[in-house]
Amino acid sequence: MPSSDATTAAAQAALPTRHTLHAPAAVLDRFTDSELASLITLRRTLHANPELSNVEHATADRLHTALRALGVTEVQRVAGTGVMARIPGRTHGAPVVALRGDIDALPIQEQTGLPFASQVPGVMHACGHDVHASWIVGAAMELLREPAAGDVLLILQPAEEIGAGARAIIDSGVLHGVAAIFGGHVDRRFLVGQVIAEPGPLAASADSFTIILTGRGAHGARPHEAADPIVAAAAVIAAVQTIVSRRIDPSRPAVCTIGSIHAGVAANVIPDTATMTGTLRATDAQTRALLTTELARIAREVAAAHGVEAVVTIERGTPPIVNPVREAAWARQAATAMLGADAVVPFGITNMGGEDFAFYMEQVPGCFLRVGARAPGEPPTAAHSPRFDVAEGAILVGAVVLAACARTASQSLATGRGVDDAEPSSGSSNRPML
Ligand code: NI
Image 1 (cartoon, rainbow, N blue to C red):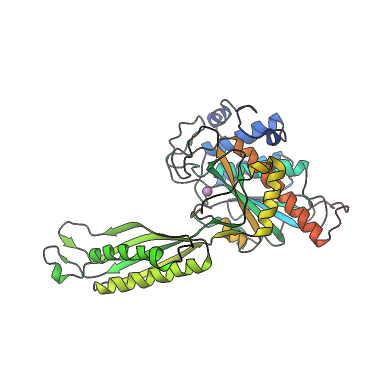
Image 2 (cartoon, rainbow, N blue to C red):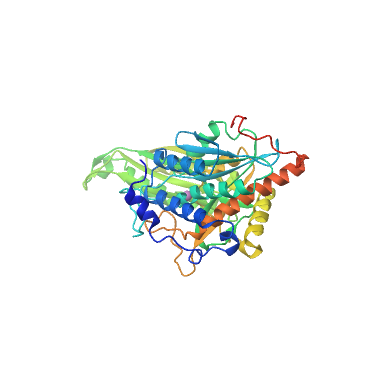
């Protein structure tokens, strides 16, 4: 659906000035007033009209239109509700770098009270993907006026929240020939203007599991005639806590959380079955594998001790993101050039959240950044909260830094490959996008 007049009015309500944006002057100075207004309005419009994973139809339309309005000629749909575009580089044949922003929202009822709050009941951009999408449009502005050595592929990816979009983009084949990929996430723990661009783990693997315990139901007054799956479930829940505390190397981060348990319908009936679901997190492959094998083993053996059968199903989700040294160094160099050395700050924590950017990094080396999104004095509201909001200066910081990542990586790769930067690009519009 195109934006209604009411939506547009809400999105344009009291646009921030350069002064109230809390972004570094070096970043603001790169944009004209009309570019600033259009980026802020785009993000607010996306925010007011959030769409869930894989149904981001109006979002994709808006982003497609925004890129075309900048004069980007190669814009097309990808992976259903995704959008991709190609910004020509300076030099024909120089390495291609990709930038990715995700675009989907969450099933959360917004409670921010913002003038551009979600107009869709029960759906909210509570993870900042409205900002990530706007970064890519802002990066296009930057790369059109100051192109990278090689072409830059812009990927506006659907369905990150369900861990499906990156795989769909990869399956479409558009990453073929891409030499490096960069993306990022807003982070309210850090101030606008601060960026994390470091090697090592930036996100955890996120595998989910289901445990179905099958025993034998009976009257609640005659438990000796039952094989009680609820008592077995209680024992399993306690026992799997020892995976992290007793089986995993304490120097390796790991999580085993049981997030749901369902069994029984009446106070005086022992049911036949109990079902639990949960999530496993790790930042390295070895720990990830140990979590799954130990979960299955302990659940089966503890259940068996109670005369109950456990069937454990693991659904593999995103792998961990581990930024490689070379690509992280490029991202650091890019952020430092745009924001100054003080702006690049240590992460200082291990993020056990999952992020489907990890699937790209199984195919193409890259770096995933965290971009500060809190104005001074604001609370560090966590993502996926109904009160989550992003300080709007972060829209510009992310755009500028991602564009700089593309330029730095492309130039370094071109130099390493001996590409002659003096040879002008023949123009990419006649070449296929893939
Ligand atoms: Ni997110």
